[in-house]
Amino acid sequence: MTGLLFVATLAVALAAVHRPFGDYMYRVVTGTKDARVERVVYRLIGVDPKATQTWGVYARGVLAFSAVSILFLYLFLRVQDKLWLSLGMPAVTDHIAWNTAVSFVTNTNWQAYAGESTLGHLVQMAGLAVQNFVSASVGIAVAVALIRGFAARKSTTLGNFWVDLTRITLRILLPLSVLAAVVFIVGGVVQNLSGGSDITTLTGATQHLTGGPVASQESIKLLGTNGGGFYNTNSAHPYENPSAWTNWLQIFLIMLIPFSLPRVFGRMAGQKRQGYAIVAVMAILAVASIALTIGFETHGGGTVPQAVGAAMEGKDVRFGVSDSATFAAATTLTSTGAVNSFHDSFTPFGGMMPIVNMMLGEVAPGGVGSGLYGLLILAVITVFVAGLMVGRTPEYLGKKIGAREMKLASLYFLVTPAIVLIGTATAFATGNNGTALNTGPHGLSEVLYAFTSAGNNNGSAFGGITVNTPWWDTALGLAMLLGRFLPMILVLALAGSLARQQPTPESEGTMPTHQPLFVGMVVGVTVVLVALTFLPALALGPIAEGLS
Picture (cartoon, rainbow, N blue to C red):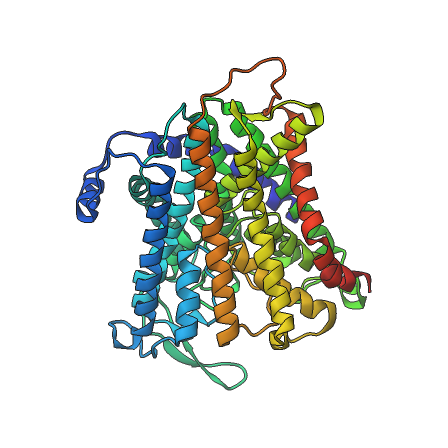
């Protein structure tokens, strides 16, 4: 009953903020006036805020900014020991520095290290936390560019990447993160620059407890659906997630921006009902995933789970099974990657659900920006399939979906599965699956989860596998890099193609894309495409384990 109330209050809160917050973001990305601090930024980087860019120039801006960010963060990590507030931490090794730099710039925030024993405060604040902001802004900017492509009439431009990046960071993410950080401090999350203290644990071993700017990093990691934690145990640590209500707030912040962006889509497209259709698809998939995850964990097989009424292994008693399962679903339905329980300890089918959530493409509601443009790609594919069924030229928002558009949409959908499945197969072929603590189906699930998380830029870890080796750091870094920027390039190319079209007026033969029928079709296409692509791998991993 408490679990149902937990989910119900989340749904009510997200529904309540969908319209006002979505309208605010709409005003941010469509406004014409620049704030004083924004004008200063434009002068510093030499950008004309009034200039608009073609999709190619926009894409080059995304890639150039991200490449410089990776190089800067890599060097930052490599010279950490020579910097102020390093807390005596040594320089980060080359392969972990590569993996971490790529991870945070791609909004994945996969961590192959323990934050509290590897990084000093300056790197955490000026390196990783900065990327928590700007990498999330890049995702939203690309989504906005795609919306402009749908809304444009015979245009060759999609806006200005640098203006979008600056406005989204300064007007949306920064104010929200400050507000959320204050609330977290009230809730007991640490915010200081303490060097830490040594304590003796119950086992007699000595541990170094570091304070630090946890609250501020916690707020932006959740709002930007990043997931990188100040502590190795992430949102299971009482310094990051002290109580049941901060746990609720974390899930709310994870889903706040992704669930509000469809409102921006509807308003920019000039048809608010289109935005409601997209958010309905997100909600249906999210509710189904959360319900299944809770169900599998509360009715888990095995003697011990049946005896105690639920599978409590790997879960914090502060949150219990239901709230932990909700967090696991929320963090993998988005691109957050934060965890408050040990996914490796979930029941076979309960552990399968986070994997499936990521395999869906994280579109329910998905990462900030990436969830919306991923679902719009699936809507384009759905319209094409529906057009084939009735023998009409497919159209979406008045734009014809021709051969070029379908090639780009199809390539977008195929990129991530290729990265995940090839990466998993390579790990087994080269013998690197030996770092997994388990063999058989569960061992396959551990490796599959790692590449699914990296390829979809999620960042959460199944656990039970050692990934801080040169091979794993390099392979997962490549998976994160390709899984982030190849889809972005395809999205921007699609946006450019759509922008050049003159919208076609609606007729009796136009398929209505705002009605429940289309919503159901998008849900069906999403599930079927994922099932056809990943079912064999799932059958060898969690499904085989669950049926054994």
